[in-house]
Image (tube, rainbow, N blue to C red; front, side, top):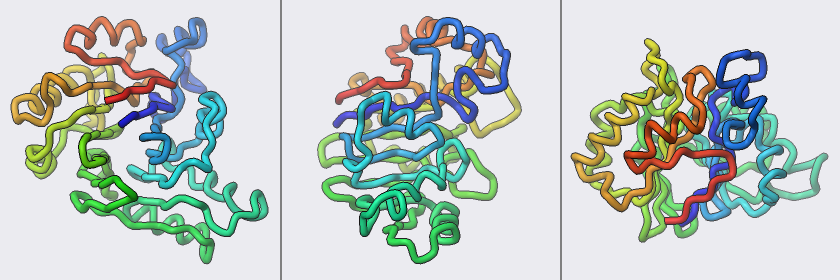
Length: 268
């Protein structure tokens, strides 16, 4: 299995559009891995995880063809993950296709917003619910409960192909006990996990700072979900976390964690 990180930034990207923060200024000056578009990923070239406002730039930069996607799996309806306007470009008058060519998976909020925005459009939308697996081609896709939103069921995504297990979590917070209990039954080959708040501690419990990130990894190890062979990769970094790519590498690299960046491909 291969996961291709198309974007590894938080809601306002890095550098943030209107920010003069230290990390934003550094990214503008140095470019490279410190420039982060809004978080999204692609599994095996076919399963698209989230469709955010930077999709066109990501696809063009990586020389991808969106017509290769067999599914788009949404995690939740925050604007950096769910750019609903981008869905219109697959059909008339922008194209002559009779269908989108991919199945859309999303929670109740996602499904409702698509139905309201595109009534009678030929989209195949499957409503997802936490801990309820759906089968897509040779994959099993299971949303698990994130601790990110108060009035919406936000999901992290477990993708299995029969031999490998991938967990993708961009907006997790510290999971509630049902999520920890569910994950006890799995050994992950790859974990892509947010570290949005970096070195900055905030009162918001819907994202992880570095210490919380470490505590999540430690608990997953103790319960056997993460093993010595699990590849651990970060994503969803905010400029307000006050951490450059190099600083994150110094802090988390000794723990065997790979700091994600836009364009990174991880095979496992």
